[in-house]
Length: 180
Image (cartoon, rainbow, N blue to C red; front, top):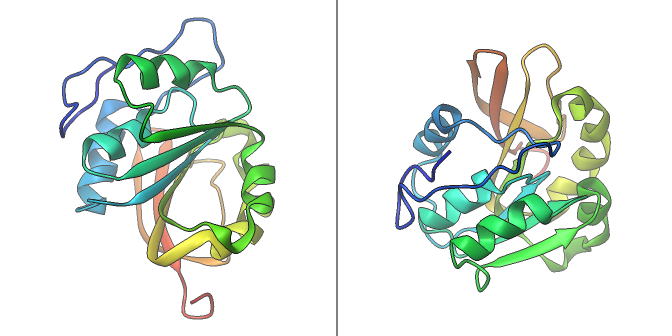
Protein backbone atom coordinates (compact mmCIF):
# COMPACT_ATOMS: atom_id res chain seq x y z
CA UNK A 1 0.00 0.00 0.00
CA UNK A 2 1.38 3.39 -1.02
CA UNK A 3 0.62 7.11 -1.00
CA UNK A 4 -0.85 7.75 -4.44
CA UNK A 5 0.05 11.34 -5.36
CA UNK A 6 1.57 14.59 -4.16
CA UNK A 7 4.88 15.18 -2.41
CA UNK A 8 4.80 11.72 -0.76
CA UNK A 9 3.52 9.91 -3.86
CA UNK A 10 4.91 6.38 -4.11
CA UNK A 11 6.02 6.21 -0.47
CA UNK A 12 5.01 3.04 1.35
CA UNK A 13 2.31 3.01 4.04
CA UNK A 14 2.59 0.38 6.74
CA UNK A 15 -0.42 -1.74 7.68
CA UNK A 16 0.58 -3.85 10.69
CA UNK A 17 -0.45 -7.49 10.36
CA UNK A 18 -2.86 -8.88 12.89
CA UNK A 19 -4.28 -5.48 13.89
CA UNK A 20 -7.92 -4.69 13.37
CA UNK A 21 -7.43 -2.17 10.56
CA UNK A 22 -8.86 -2.09 7.04
CA UNK A 23 -6.91 0.54 5.12
CA UNK A 24 -8.75 2.37 2.35
CA UNK A 25 -7.62 0.80 -0.91
CA UNK A 26 -5.48 2.76 -3.35
CA UNK A 27 -8.28 2.61 -5.93
CA UNK A 28 -10.82 4.14 -3.55
CA UNK A 29 -8.38 6.80 -2.29
CA UNK A 30 -7.56 7.81 -5.84
CA UNK A 31 -11.27 8.15 -6.68
CA UNK A 32 -11.99 10.13 -3.48
CA UNK A 33 -9.21 12.65 -4.04
CA UNK A 34 -10.07 13.00 -7.71
CA UNK A 35 -13.63 13.91 -6.69
CA UNK A 36 -12.46 16.30 -3.96
CA UNK A 37 -10.15 18.27 -6.24
CA UNK A 38 -7.92 20.98 -4.71
CA UNK A 39 -7.34 20.67 -0.96
CA UNK A 40 -4.31 22.93 -0.59
CA UNK A 41 -4.08 24.35 2.95
CA UNK A 42 -7.02 22.30 4.26
CA UNK A 43 -7.45 21.45 7.92
CA UNK A 44 -8.30 17.74 8.03
CA UNK A 45 -9.80 15.38 10.62
CA UNK A 46 -9.35 11.67 9.91
CA UNK A 47 -11.79 9.86 12.22
CA UNK A 48 -11.30 6.12 12.73
CA UNK A 49 -7.96 6.74 11.03
CA UNK A 50 -6.48 3.24 11.33
CA UNK A 51 -3.23 3.46 9.34
CA UNK A 52 -3.92 7.10 8.48
CA UNK A 53 -4.08 6.42 4.73
CA UNK A 54 -6.74 9.08 4.03
CA UNK A 55 -5.24 11.82 6.22
CA UNK A 56 -1.72 11.12 4.95
CA UNK A 57 -2.93 11.23 1.34
CA UNK A 58 -4.51 14.62 2.10
CA UNK A 59 -1.25 15.93 3.57
CA UNK A 60 0.69 14.63 0.57
CA UNK A 61 -1.68 16.57 -1.70
CA UNK A 62 -1.24 19.87 0.14
CA UNK A 63 -3.46 19.84 3.24
CA UNK A 64 -1.92 21.95 6.00
CA UNK A 65 -2.59 19.78 9.06
CA UNK A 66 -4.40 16.59 10.01
CA UNK A 67 -5.85 15.38 13.27
CA UNK A 68 -5.84 11.57 13.28
CA UNK A 69 -8.32 10.12 15.76
CA UNK A 70 -8.83 6.50 16.71
CA UNK A 71 -9.17 4.36 19.81
CA UNK A 72 -5.76 2.90 18.99
CA UNK A 73 -3.31 5.21 17.24
CA UNK A 74 -0.46 2.71 17.05
CA UNK A 75 -1.19 1.74 13.41
CA UNK A 76 -0.94 5.37 12.25
CA UNK A 77 2.00 6.26 14.50
CA UNK A 78 4.51 4.29 12.43
CA UNK A 79 3.36 5.93 9.20
CA UNK A 80 3.52 9.42 10.69
CA UNK A 81 7.10 8.85 11.84
CA UNK A 82 8.28 6.96 8.72
CA UNK A 83 6.99 9.74 6.48
CA UNK A 84 8.30 12.54 8.75
CA UNK A 85 4.85 14.08 9.29
CA UNK A 86 4.97 14.66 13.05
CA UNK A 87 4.93 18.45 12.62
CA UNK A 88 1.70 18.29 10.57
CA UNK A 89 -0.18 15.59 12.48
CA UNK A 90 -1.93 15.57 15.83
CA UNK A 91 -2.62 12.04 17.06
CA UNK A 92 -5.62 11.68 19.35
CA UNK A 93 -6.27 8.39 21.10
CA UNK A 94 -10.02 8.50 21.80
CA UNK A 95 -13.34 7.33 20.53
CA UNK A 96 -13.80 9.57 17.48
CA UNK A 97 -17.47 10.37 18.13
CA UNK A 98 -16.74 11.27 21.77
CA UNK A 99 -13.73 13.39 20.76
CA UNK A 100 -15.68 15.22 18.08
CA UNK A 101 -18.46 15.99 20.54
CA UNK A 102 -15.97 17.27 23.13
CA UNK A 103 -13.99 19.75 21.02
CA UNK A 104 -16.89 22.19 20.72
CA UNK A 105 -16.91 25.25 18.52
CA UNK A 106 -13.22 26.06 19.04
CA UNK A 107 -11.97 24.10 16.02
CA UNK A 108 -13.11 23.74 12.46
CA UNK A 109 -12.15 21.42 9.64
CA UNK A 110 -12.30 21.83 5.88
CA UNK A 111 -12.31 18.09 5.32
CA UNK A 112 -13.46 15.29 7.62
CA UNK A 113 -12.93 11.62 6.79
CA UNK A 114 -15.15 9.08 8.55
CA UNK A 115 -14.12 5.47 7.98
CA UNK A 116 -15.23 3.34 10.95
CA UNK A 117 -15.23 -0.45 10.98
CA UNK A 118 -17.91 -1.37 8.45
CA UNK A 119 -20.01 -3.32 10.96
CA UNK A 120 -20.32 -0.29 13.27
CA UNK A 121 -20.91 2.46 10.70
CA UNK A 122 -24.62 3.06 11.32
CA UNK A 123 -24.14 2.86 15.10
CA UNK A 124 -21.48 5.59 15.24
CA UNK A 125 -23.33 7.83 12.79
CA UNK A 126 -25.76 9.15 15.41
CA UNK A 127 -23.10 10.75 17.62
CA UNK A 128 -21.14 11.98 14.62
CA UNK A 129 -24.19 13.51 12.96
CA UNK A 130 -24.88 15.65 16.03
CA UNK A 131 -21.30 16.95 16.31
CA UNK A 132 -20.10 17.43 12.73
CA UNK A 133 -22.07 20.56 11.79
CA UNK A 134 -20.45 22.40 14.70
CA UNK A 135 -16.89 21.69 13.54
CA UNK A 136 -17.25 21.86 9.77
CA UNK A 137 -15.74 25.02 8.26
CA UNK A 138 -17.79 27.01 5.73
CA UNK A 139 -17.60 25.09 2.45
CA UNK A 140 -16.19 22.07 4.30
CA UNK A 141 -16.83 18.52 3.20
CA UNK A 142 -17.25 15.17 4.92
CA UNK A 143 -16.23 11.92 3.24
CA UNK A 144 -17.74 8.71 4.60
CA UNK A 145 -16.62 5.22 3.73
CA UNK A 146 -18.85 2.32 4.68
CA UNK A 147 -20.16 -1.04 3.57
CA UNK A 148 -22.60 -0.55 0.69
CA UNK A 149 -25.10 -2.76 2.53
CA UNK A 150 -24.66 -0.89 5.81
CA UNK A 151 -24.19 2.81 4.92
CA UNK A 152 -23.40 5.66 7.27
CA UNK A 153 -26.29 8.11 7.28
CA UNK A 154 -25.73 11.73 8.33
CA UNK A 155 -29.10 13.56 8.08
CA UNK A 156 -27.57 16.90 9.11
CA UNK A 157 -25.49 16.90 5.92
CA UNK A 158 -26.35 16.93 2.25
CA UNK A 159 -24.83 14.16 0.11
CA UNK A 160 -23.28 15.68 -3.02
CA UNK A 161 -21.64 12.60 -4.50
CA UNK A 162 -21.99 8.90 -3.88
CA UNK A 163 -20.06 6.08 -5.54
CA UNK A 164 -19.81 2.36 -4.98
CA UNK A 165 -16.52 0.48 -5.35
CA UNK A 166 -17.27 -3.22 -4.98
CA UNK A 167 -18.67 -3.58 -1.45
CA UNK A 168 -17.50 -0.11 -0.42
CA UNK A 169 -19.73 2.96 -0.52
CA UNK A 170 -18.10 6.42 -0.51
CA UNK A 171 -20.24 9.49 0.02
CA UNK A 172 -19.11 13.12 -0.03
CA UNK A 173 -21.30 15.44 2.05
CA UNK A 174 -21.53 19.14 2.79
CA UNK A 175 -23.72 21.22 5.09
CA UNK A 176 -27.21 21.50 3.69
CA UNK A 177 -29.16 24.77 3.43
CA UNK A 178 -30.53 24.33 6.97
CA UNK A 179 -27.07 23.58 8.40
CA UNK A 180 -25.23 26.58 7.13
